[in-house]
Image (cartoon, rainbow, N blue to C red):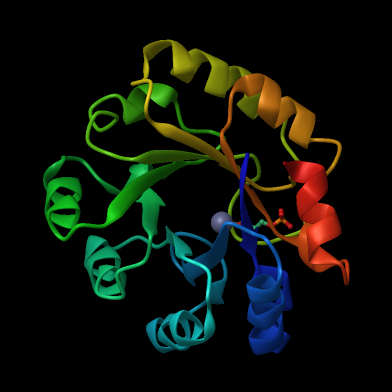
Length: 206
Ligand code: DX5
Ligand code: ZN
């Protein structure tokens, strides 16, 4: 199980949180970009992510909770390992094809209320699907178990090599649901960053 650590809850001590992730055996650093429109919170403006990219020794897993495709293209300039944006903001495959032509791995995130049929037109063109197990916007919320059946249903129709990731409320209890559903990557924020020993928490998720 790949583990991507979100430092959202440590936003006011961001540099030390990024350094803690550097020191840990996390696979990715998850960066939650919020524009105040797609979600009711503003976090990680472009210059902040640029700074994070400079100090992180982990590959970046950027999760864009933004309304505007132009913003997605702006963050693509940072060439993260994964650039994930929401299926709810697109209506054709053009943007994905363009981003792929830049050599970036692309993810599509899906909110708890959104039907998996919305993923169908894009699932052969992306590298990852990020299932939200909370309503996006804030860290520290509790895991919505309804997502598990949704992932199971999606796996029946999706390409085999697609990475299935999950984000929101993942901890040492809810991780077993994620494994059963067939996720091969998890995003975890507060469960990891609320503890001084990031590696101990990460180990419980693997
Ligand atoms: C929520 C974010 C998550 C969040 C996860 O909008 O997308 O990545 O930081 O935090 P926890 O693990 O605390 O739910
Ligand atoms: Zn996220």
